[in-house]
Image 1 (spheres, one colour):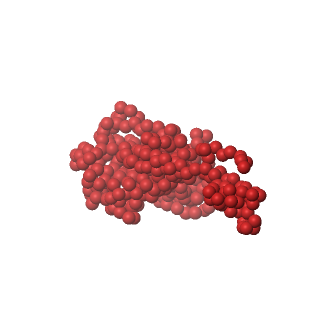
Image 2 (cartoon, rainbow, N blue to C red):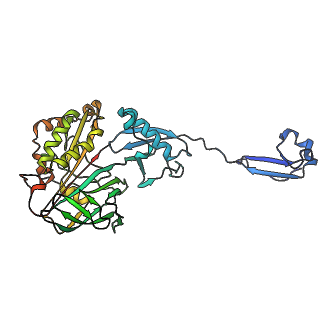
Image 3 (cartoon, rainbow, N blue to C red):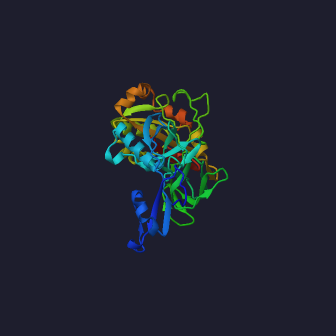
Length: 387
């Protein structure tokens, strides 16, 4: 008896209905089919999903240029890859338990497309030998905006972010708007009183400053970052672009200090940049707990024009002085200092005066903190840990 044919490349399961099993479906050995052939009234044929057991070997390249080799199967998810990468980086960098990266720390780019955690290698067309770029999600930590005026005045402050980062916190709380270029913008209407007291017109909240925080958005369209050859050179040969999703902190544009030297160094540098006592104290105490997890700290202050391009700030009425200070920093292991050539940054820390940061950041030669000047003045400080 021949009822139908099944192609050889198909894996199938055949179930039958036999009187001895009642209404239950039964699977019988092909060797005893002749015994039951005449009793079979109904047959169910189900095509089985053939399991793809191919092994896919690939490389992941991080923003620091580190390469990691991983393997998986077509059904392996991007989330699984992120977990493997986080474990590999934590082990390589010797991160403490409280400072470890997890799978949410990364975004992957493959052929100009950002990969989603729930996608599989097969969904993303990842094949044996593929190379995937991994970008670390970064946070612009506690940028705060102070407004100073000797007399009460009404002011409007608008802050815009380029698409490479997005607001994660705003206070006084405001709804942000989407901009035409794909970024975001927020506006505060405040009354400025002497002594840096601000009153938010909408909520009537009294605050000392305007606070915001942002997370980076790595994307395939991230522009390259240009830089001067040395932070001592205040006239760079190329205009620097600060990309918050790929910040530029290298031995050639930073200084390297032992962590116990950092607080006093920052106090002197921030004073030179115009920060008053409260701002310097807040800045240092905000970053110090994270810095103390490391033995060595590389840091730099980026030029105002580079920062302004990624976070344009518009204040009305126009201030007589605006100072925006944004620091990039990174903790380094002894092996990284030697392998990546950070001796140049060590020498620079020993030879470069903290006053040099004024030329690098691009602020006037202030004889006193911004708080003590005349007219309507704006001061902002913030930073980012480069992981």
